[in-house]
Length: 361
Image 1 (cartoon, rainbow, N blue to C red):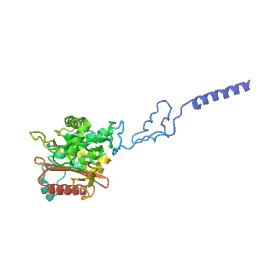
Image 2 (image 1 turned 180 degrees about the horizontal axis):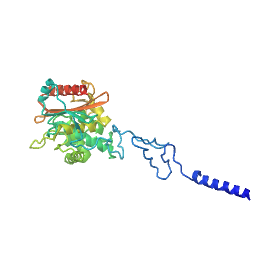
Image 3 (image 1 turned 180 degrees about the vertical axis):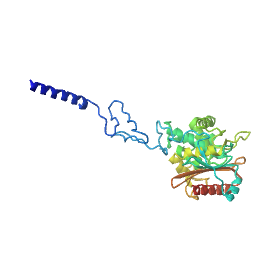
Image 4 (image 1 turned 45 degrees about the horizontal axis):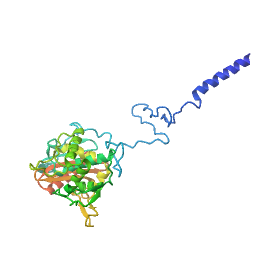
C-alpha cells in the first residue's frame, strides 16, 4: 500500500511541475519583453522611477532616440517630423533668464528693431529686445515654407527629395532674388529646396508652394494653419517667399522669439542643416546647359565657427534681418535680429551676440 502512496505523490508532483513549466506555456524572453507570437507582445513596464525599458528581443526593432529627425530621400510613412520634447510653442516654452549685455554690445544692439538670443539646448532666453512684437520678416518667411515641405516629406506624402518638379510659367515670373527658373526646366524637389534656403530664391519658394498645394494661395493657408497648430500667434503670411504682396504691398509678419522656435524645429532635419550650412552650391543643368551658383545669403556661414544656418531677409520695411543657428561643443544657440539698417552691421551684431552667448555660462 505504501508503494501506491509513493507513486501517487510522485504523479502529483509531475502534474504540478508540468502545469508551471510545460512546453505549452508561452515564455517571455530575457528582460521581460514578450517575444514574437506570444499573447500581447508589448514591452514590460519599467520596474520603477528612472529605470529604462529593457532592450528589444531578437528580431524586434529598437526605437531610435528622439533627437534629430532624418530627412530621407523617400518619405517615411507614419513619421510626423516631431521630436519628443520640442512641444508646442507657448509664452512659457523658453525660460526667461535675460541678463544685461556689455555696454558696447548693448549700444550695438540699438541698430536692430527686435531681437532675441536663445540657448536652444537649455530652452532659455538669454537676451531679448521686443522679441514678442510682430514685425515684417521678409525672406525669413521661407523658414515656414521649408518646414511645411519637409514635414510633408516625413508624413508619407507622395513626394520624395527626388520627385521631379516642372517649373511653371507663374514661378518663372516671380521677381526679386531668384535663380531665373525657366518653364522649360524640371528639377528634383531637393534642388528647389536648396535654391530657396541657400540662395533665398523667391521663384523657388513660389514653385514649392505650387507643387505642394496646387497654388500659392492654398499653400499660404497651410503655412498659417501650421503656425496655429504650433502655437505661433505672431505670424501673418501673405505669400511663400516674403516679398511685399499685392497692390497694398503687405508684408509677412512674425516675432523674433517665434522665429527662434521655428529655427529650432528646423534644426532637427539634418538635410536642412546641411543646406543651411552650405556656403556655395550649384543648380544644374540649366536649359542652356550651364549651371547657376547658389550663394548662401547668410555671410556668417564658414566665417563664424559653428554657424550652420538659417536664413536672411530684407525688404524696405523689414530692414536687414537674420536668424543664425550655431552649435559648438554640443550646445545650440539661436540669434534673431530684425530691422537693421545695414547688412554689415546686422552680421557683426549677430556675430557678437553669438560670442557673448557662448561666453555666458
